[in-house]
Image (cartoon, rainbow, N blue to C red; front, side, top):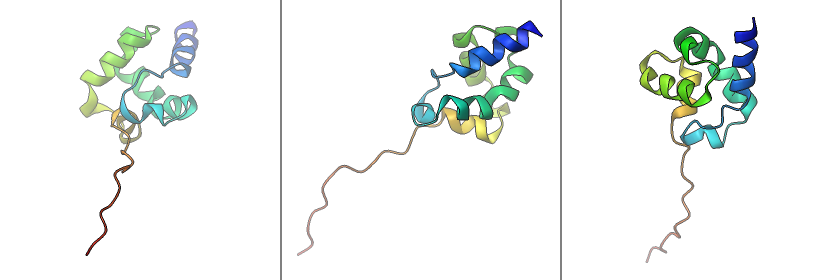
Length: 85
């Protein structure tokens, strides 16, 4: 039980994911990845860096929602468009 509580605390701070993780809230990250962390990376709990590394290695086994937390956020197009002549 303590291990589970430590996981919850760790996943609450799960902000080291790359890409869209910065756009996702911590609650969204926790919701998306908590089950995968317990299922695939129990040995890494409570070390946040080890959980993240484990999940990256097992990317193909992550749920679609959790996998999305590791994908890069879409880039906004800040380039100006050239007027057509």
